[in-house]
Length: 119
Ligand SMILES: [Zn+2]
Image 1: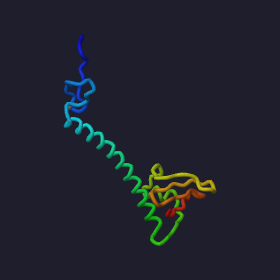
Image 2: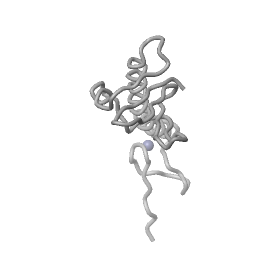
Image 3: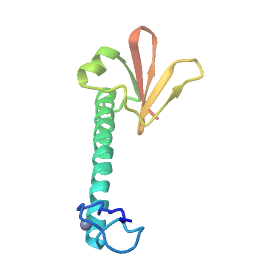
Image 4: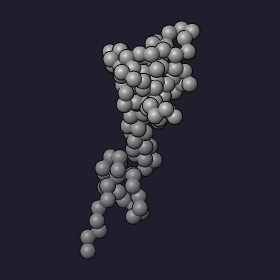
């Protein structure tokens, strides 16, 4: 009977020893885990970048000293605001939807306008 060969998850060399072994040694385990973490971190960074850009756009439109401002949806799109990314979203008591990027929110108004305000 031939024993089924097992391979290192990092370098793909044939493994010797215990049946539950996944890596040749600590070096291969570390390489594997570092690669896994870098993939996850890259995805998190790319989402964070969009969220921060959205916040920056809202802050810039809010203008210094103003607590809130109404802006047309087209203006937000022209600035590069990505409506698919927010840190919170929901519906205000009046029934209009809102989304928040960290500490700045926008509430959908009539006529494709948004009210931008600090939370
Ligand atoms: Zn290995």
